[in-house]
Amino acid sequence: MANPFEDGRDGGGVLDPAANPFRPGMGRIPPDFGGRDEALLRAKVVVDQLGALVAPEFVLYRGVRGVGKTALLAYVRQRAHDADLLTIHLEADRDDASLEVARETILRDAAPLLDGLDKKLGRTLAAVQVAGTGVRLRDKGPPGATFESLIADVATLAGRTARGVLLTVDEVHEAGDLMLKPLLRAAHRAAQDELPFGVLLSGLPNAAENLFVEGQTYTERLARVDLGLLDRRGTADAIDRPFARVADCHVDELVVDAVHDGSGGYPWFVQLWGEALWDLATDPDRIELPVARAAGARVQLRVHDFYEGRWRRVPTGRATLLVVALAEQGGEAGMGELLEAIEVTHQAASPARRSLLDLGLCWSPTRGRLAFSVPGFASWILRTRPDRN
Image (cartoon, rainbow, N blue to C red; front, side, top):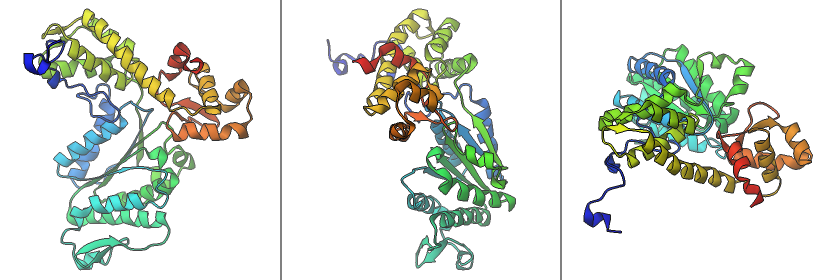
């Protein structure tokens, strides 16, 4: 085979691989958020209101892994930055029990609000203290109390400096009440004071559910937007529009059908399909069914590697037994059914269950139930039976 650097070849298809707009990968911004019109509209309203110095509602995006939650937050931060809003981003971490990392991140990202801070104003802040030429956090006691005061200070500074602030928090199911309660309490008070401080959150489908069940006042302004699998129209938009925009290339309806059926509408897999269709295109003006068949063969290998990688993370012993039993139950089941299937007591299986949750392989839809955190994993296990290899 000739050296592609020497003979000028740049791929197997007729479209420039360097211009391929599709970006498979967890958390990467796709070339088009097909099927996410409502989610984007919610975020745009928040950004527009912050730009107008109006207190917006808070939005929580929920869904299984790979449906675009992290990518959506990243995209909205870009648009907010373009609108001259100050953006702050946190990734919730259950190991940050003292909230030290979260507090330091907020203090760092909020630095532009503190430039030239008036000393008189500085004395009114609850958590932020001017120390010589810099700033630091006052010692306010419990981590949650200090965190809540810090959020309140940032909202206050947003109002005083007339600059909207957007805080995004990813993986909020990891945060627990330690972070969410003080965050939402402070944000709710900021909204009552009409301060331009916005919050976008994302997490698994059960994220913050206990707060809604409790009916706390601070959830009144928190809207839930569930991100599921794409319908056919969403898949079509996610595939069609990037080809049309970047290459002025048309994708046949039969190809869209193949992508939707092959991906199951799972956004991460749709991106895999888009990437493969682009790389294997034989006509610069049209993507037809033979290309889709070739792309499907490539995608199958990538999907297999994806699931196999998740399987390799499953701990041996009872965790493996739980995973196989869960697959046999269709990917979601009550713990009672699973324990009966593997003939293990609840106490004996508890560490294995916790390890699956901690590793992000499973999540708990409701108390006493377990489910895989990515779609299709159950059918892959039953089809390949990796537990027997």
